[in-house]
Length: 280
Ligand SMILES: O=C(O)CCC(=O)C(=O)O
Ligand SMILES: [Fe+2]
Image 1 (tube, rainbow, N blue to C red):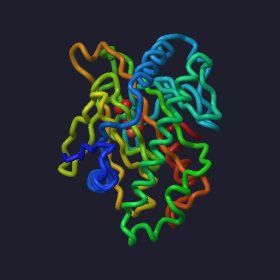
Image 2 (image 1 turned 90 degrees about the vertical axis):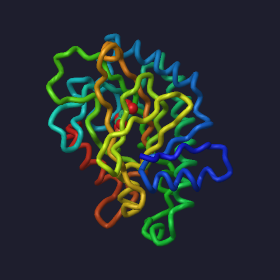
Image 3 (image 1 turned 135 degrees about the vertical axis):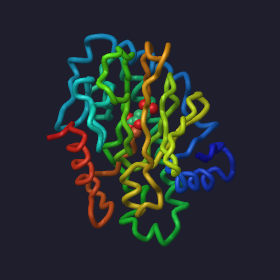
């Protein structure tokens, strides 16, 4: 699968990057502004948090979706039968975050959100007019004052060997939102589905930042920007004894944004959360 690796600072970066998003739903940036030391600091301090007991005081709210989702709660990907083997914490600027973890999380949220907004403006600029005419408002407007952009800290625990047959760290899924920004995780495992039906490893050296289109942008662009299925596979050998930590930022529109004749952002999100089993 030909996911373009694009130098964020090159003069033709926006055009090349959006072409890759159109062709594959994925793009990879090098020379990007996300600070490695900040991300590694977050991985280390959240691994401690997940290894401790304090997390149970932050049980997620079904209403607001912030807080801690245990492995027992963890979502079941749309169309999958087994729960994913993961636990995670949802961070919103207005939501709960353990005090000792807040400074770095806020700093990262701001950096990643700014970059996501810039990349969405690239997507907007390179949308062909016949597609853009169906956007109900400019893409950059859709995220103005949005309170729903979500930073998720994920921890995939070491495998015990007694996981249900067929369960994966993260079963194949498309993201719900407009655009996702994903720095390299501390361990490999992320794969993307090619048009040929084969799974391809996504590079996990820190120099690369992975961006993918979510279902809401696919819906708003009538499929011009595809939301590509991806998954996290279970490690074998020594890797199975290690935790994996990752840090996707999901760029979400305001709830009242009209995506298409079928959906507003809110009606779409609520439907998907019910399917994932994290909303009643
Ligand atoms: O952990 C990863 O690398 C990817 C996580 C992911 O795809 C998700 O949470 O939607
Ligand atoms: Fe995902």
